[in-house]
Length: 161
Image (tube, helix red, strand yellow):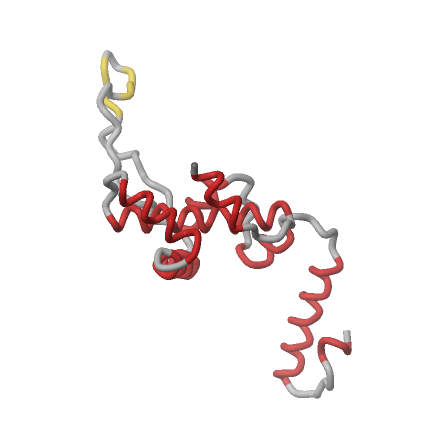
C-alpha cells in the first residue's frame, strides 16, 4: 500500500487519501472480471448496450400515460402506433455529457467520421446522427470493457456495414 500512498501524514486529508487508496487496492485485488472497470466507474453492471444506453441517457422513450384504456372493466393496451417521447430522463448526467461531447469530436475525425457521414447520407438529421455516433461510442466502450481486448478501428466499420 505504501507504493500507492507514498509518504503518509497524520492529518485528516491523509486519512481520506489512505481510505481511497485502500479502496482502490481492494478493487484491484478482486477477481479480474470484465465488469470490474465498469463497476468502479459507473456503479452498474450493464450486460448489453441497450441498458447501458439507458444508464447514459441515450435511450429513446416510447411510453406515455395514454397507452392504456379501460374496456369492459379491464385495462387494455391501445391499438395505436407507438410514438417516440424523446430520450429517457433518469440517467447519469455527467456520463451523458461526456459521451455527447466525445461524439461531437468523433464526428470530425477518424473512423467515426465515416460512420457519421454515412448516417447523414441516408437522410438522417445531424442531431440524430450525432446521437447514433454517441451510441456507437458507448457500445464500443462497453464491448472493450467486457472483452478486455484492445480497441480496433477496423471492427467499427465492419460492424456498421
